[in-house]
Image (cartoon, rainbow, N blue to C red; front, top):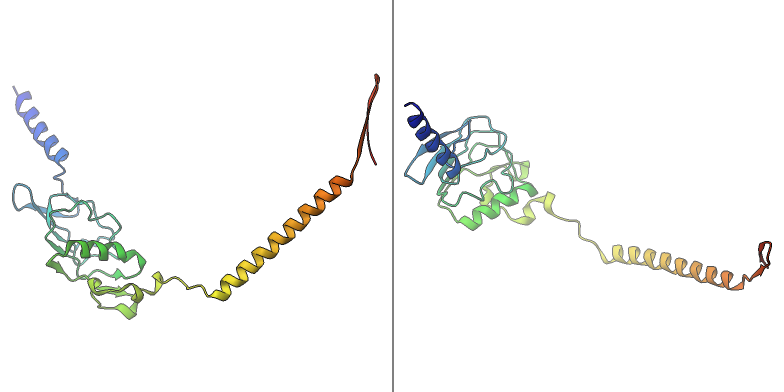
Length: 192
């Protein structure tokens, strides 16, 4: 008779896992409603954002060692209303663009403490206020017309040399005459 209750518990566990309502090992999860969760991963010395339940309504990641939020980390968090990333050593380089774009798409009111720590020129600046031209590692070196001219001139000179060599080879082959003598005993090939 113990099989019935065990099967029921197994079924409830399976539905919970299949529904995606799980909690990362380092975090504490509290059900706010039937379909929303508060996930508290604060002060866990996390270096990476853990996989998060899609039902996350509030997310607390403050006081960790996060230097970036990898692309896609928050994409499944459609219900997220509060996010705290304060006191993390965020690197505001090209990799921060995912977070900037994600925040701008969400237009969330409950965002707190998302500030740059590195590089020193952006220390303390809120991530939401960053402009592309402020992140020097994302700026591509602009090519000058002289760069194009030099590269194109080299390319044209190389193609001209190649064409000249090809014409020379064709003329040389045109001047070569072959005579094939076929006899019953042997085949002879001579060039003149």
